[in-house]
Amino acid sequence: VMAAGRIRQIGTPQEIYNAPADIEIARLFGDPTINLLDVTPQRSGGDVFVELSNVRVRLGDYGADVVGRQCVLGLRPETISFVDAAAPGAIPVTVEAETPLNEKTVTLALTARGREILVSRPAGTPGPTAGPAHIAVNGMQAFLFDKAGGALLPRADLAAKRNGEAA
Image (cartoon, rainbow, N blue to C red; front, side):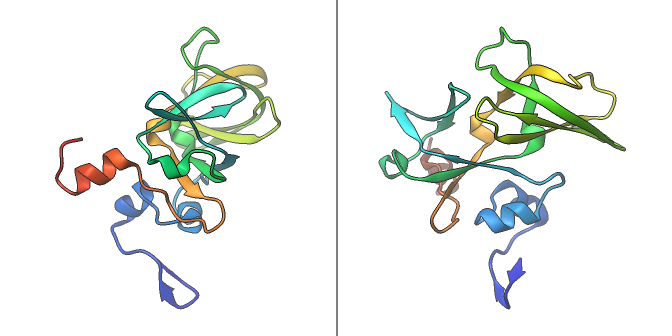
């Protein structure tokens, strides 16, 4: 990936999609575009988490330096799903619009704080078209970026696997 005449990241499209070096690269790869939400990670016990509409979303194993830091949470629309209100971790949203796009349907939803979330699902898959609904977010598939510089913040458990250590 090149930008402003310099190489920003090297890898296959799949590698870059799954581990973008920064926010700008994450925006370039994916249709619909990645959801980006300002967050401040917290820790409870061993878990690092963020809150979306007052619901905790566990992010995985990050170092202590992310706790209390201004970050941006990146959520790919296809990693978000509609769920029943009683499902564990169900996040309340309001569905504003739905757009069919050939092989997928993209839904625009608003969180309790009015933040926009795009949800993508295969075409023909049932889902709400308007009004109150609930989504589930897999925090283990989320990206955490530094808000000031935009760089991807590495998860400790993934870094250990890349280095050949047991996680």
